[in-house]
Structure formats: C-alpha cells, structure tokens
Image (cartoon, rainbow, N blue to C red; front, top):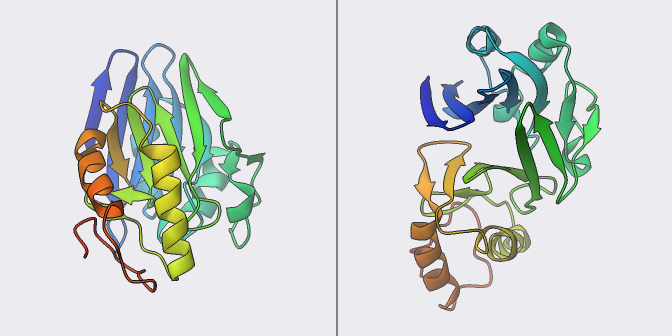
Length: 213
C-alpha cells in the first residue's frame, strides 16, 4: 500500500494485490472524506481496511478481466454501494452493474469530479478515469506501451484509442496503470509518436512496447 497522490483536495492510494500484482486505487476527497474504489483485484479485507475512515460511494471497474474483479462480489456485498462499468464490459461479472459509464461522463466524489474516458482495445469496454491531472488507466496504457491485445485488430484499436483519447491530454498528466508503477504522459508521448511514425508488421499484437520495430 502506498499513498501516491496527496495533492490539494485529493488523496490517491495504490494497493498492489493478488497473484498478478494488480493495482487497486482508492480516491478520497480530502474535504468530505468520500471515496471511490477503482478495481477490485483480490484481498477484499485489505481493501476494506484501507477504506476504513472514508465514506465509500462507488466501485468502478476499468475493465472486466478476472485479475481486476477477484474481490468484487465480496466488496459489493460488504460495502453495498453502486458498481459502475462500461456496458461493453458488463458481461461475465459476478455482480450486476448499477451504473453504465459512458465516454465523457463523470462521477462526483465529494468535491471531486471523476471524468470517464472510454478506451477500447485491451477490452471493448475499457475505461480510464481522470482525476485532476491523474489518469487511472487500467490496462489501456503502461509505461512503455499499451496493454496486452489478443488480436492485431485489437492492437490497432488500442493504438487509435491512445492516439485520440490519451495523447491529447496535457503533458503534466501522470498515468497510474493497472499494474506496475506510474509514468508521465509527457514521456509516453515522445515514445508513442516515435512508434506510430514507423512501419510495423500487420500481425503485431500481444505484449507490444513503443520501442518495437
């Protein structure tokens, strides 16, 4: 567990949980102590203890893969708060979503506005959440590359998504991904635009980095 942001009105805590080292994030409005849980990988008790002292308002899933949802049923049962997902990723979850997220929509957590960005590619319903200058990116983008893609079409989609939805954001954005450490968007822009300026194999997919030829 680490507090990765303590900035003005917002505090963000990262918990690395489960066998895949998946990040869950707890976003807290420091004015009201209202909180938002982003992803529910595993170890529900650890997450509940970290939420103690706050007022949980929503659980949001960045996407529906099992390494991000392992503790979802228990947390939903214990917290009894709305679950929010993009409708394209609502299938196969252990709980029925209460809120359908849409591109450009937002959730209010106390004095905080949480912006929703639909970022398909890793999954059809992947979303990123923008909290001020902090982007909770799920498995859409990592330091040095996009999230894993199963097909060339999915890879091409995530590249288009990153180009149209993530790269136009300000340089001072900090990316907090679904696994591993943070990255600066400014640094990722340089690597990304170098990547798309080169020619790549038509069947490129899987675990790709921006340094790939």
